[in-house]
Image 1 (cartoon, rainbow, N blue to C red):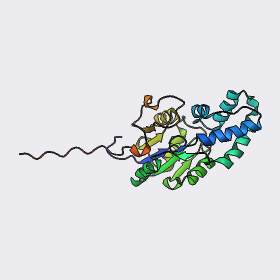
Image 2: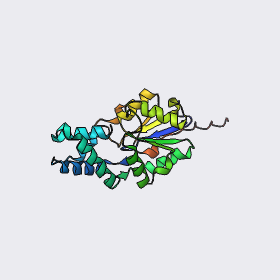
Image 3: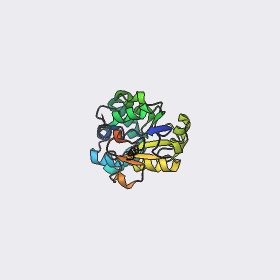
Length: 230
């Protein structure tokens, strides 16, 4: 697979790739923690912790603030309640995302959104931010038996799109996306502005590292025209 022609399909991550959702996570988690009489968390902690699904986020948060692990079930129930209420209210689409999605859509290739966020929350967020129309499929962390960085969600998404992994680009923001893509056999493109657990994303091998999604290169630059002979 080269940059000479666009791939057969695109799979795009959501949190940290298309939408800055840290504000949503912080607001929801702090409502839950307040109800549990536990101290709040800040944006910096959440940025280092998101990306591996809601269960991981909640368990990590409880451990961080000194909460009993046995509080997980109650915390999960309250998390779902508050996320339903706050989803999208404290989040923003990253600059360049709409323009980048327009470029991807213009290729005519099928597109899927694949996230570790629960599917219902993902679909609602895409709708609220005006991004739903770009995607033929939307899959969340509860749609498959395992989450990214396991390759299963990517393999199942490729199957749903009717494309081979080697011909399907994964576009994400973290080493989780890159690890899942590598294990599934998908080329990966990574954005620099997302949530990579505090580590520089340029250290993770990828086809491209982007400052904005609309900088994605879908074809190789044209060769310069030959100079006419004298």
